[in-house]
Image (cartoon, rainbow, N blue to C red; front, side):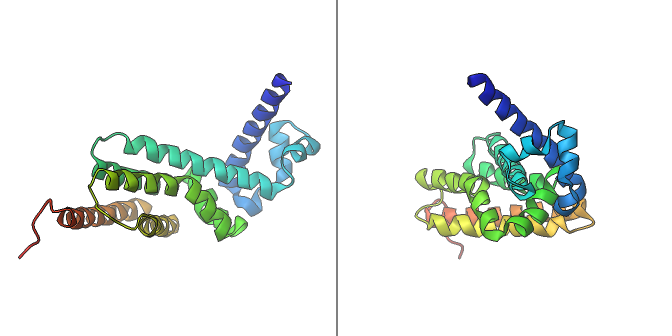
Length: 207
């Protein structure tokens, strides 16, 4: 029984990996389930045993992409011990990872269009947004940002980051646009930090 479960898990992982490459290269509409099945060396029946249709397979691919991006956010944020730098590094990791070619089309273009915004947002909330809220909670617990409406702050920052990635996804000069986006994130973080320091009494108000 354990062996069969392991084999099933490996088949699902293989299908998701192969489907991801097809969805990345051809987009959801252009990716043929027959081609994915052929490359995986499986029958359609075997695929339907795990996924009811192409849309359900795509949902699992998007979930894998969202998790991978969140793992990267967590890993890169942990490179610093300073909570402000952690917040900045996590935001930068999210933006840069989301617009990479292997993620962009699935996560930012086809994801919301195929599954709908509610499903997409729920998935985002379970991954990257969850980490963002956790970071803000840590900062509040340490007295860095003082009392604050964490839900509102989380959705505000997450919304700004998501909109930034959607903008970048459609920019032809993406390298330059990405630099501008990160400069804007840096400006925001600096202003946010100074306001928090004033609110917590760590610096005196100007004037």
